[in-house]
Amino acid sequence: MGGTPDRVPLLELAIAKNIKEQFLNKKIASVADDVEFYQKAGYDYIKVSPIIDMNPDHLQPHEGKRVSEATDTTNEREWHASGAGIITTMEEFEKFRFPKPEEVDYSPFEEVQQFLPDGMKVICQYGDIFTWTWDFMGFETFSFALIDNPELIRRLFDKIGEIELNLFENCLSFDNIGALFYSDDIAINSGLFVRLDIYREYLFPWMKKIGDLCKKHDIPFIFHSDGNLWEAMDDLIKCGVNALQPLEPQAIDIVDVKKKRGNDFCLVGNVDVDLLTRGTPEEVEAEVIRLLKNVAPEGGYCVGSGNTVAEYVKYENYLAMIETAKKYGEYPIEI
Image 1 (spheres, rainbow, N blue to C red):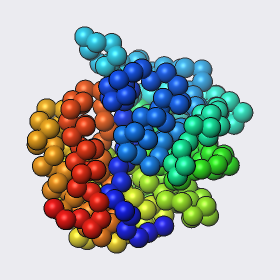
Image 2 (spheres, helix red, strand yellow):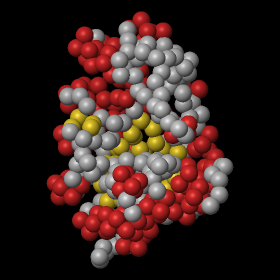
Image 3 (tube, rainbow, N blue to C red):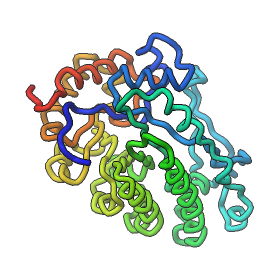
């Protein structure tokens, strides 16, 4: 790993299906279609995830299920439990049925192999050890339990961490795995969700195990988290993280990160999703050029959104982002 590539790569955690379909001018109906999109759009990889139901009995939170109102049901969002979730006591933890290893479906990793063009890799993505823990409990219950019931916190973190580590280990048994992409929102715009020592106690040991897997297989460890990660960066290095995504512009100055941490991490993203949604192609082009000028020289940067390419992003703005990266992103950067 390391060195300067021939061009600035493109990288996303997720791209909405309707965006892909507009690009191909046809429905995405198969793995072959998905590979076709990633290849033609200029990505060096296709993102693949194991299929797993973390709540196989589909239990509902104590506070009930909450769904956002939307005139278009395809845009509905289910809210995370904020008060009392599914697991609020040790008894509920003991009774809860977690997915068994044999219930995980890895067939997407098998199916994609026959469609990969030469040189294209698979990025294995999964995550949310922290998020699943607090979501199962409800954030208020989780917060109180950090003081009142740390044993429940530890048991839940360790159970989910064990499941996810096993997922990544199994994914690495397939051919053409180019990176592991662990996603887990641990911060907001103003800083970390919880104190750093809590992550050090419960989450980062599991992230380090994932990082050690990457090191063993000599592949990059990409980490997605929204928010301001400055306080956690030293710990993320110790976990073996090689790349940070998406570096939301509202939360963190990517140029400052490049100056201070450019030798520690590859930086990914930072193109504002609000700009991609409400701006113009010309404004998007100008922003990508700014990032190429200030972050891309000497390598260590991938163009992408400041979160994900959601279904409400303007297609013409998404196109402007990737086409600007292709037009001006060849090394050496000369803009």
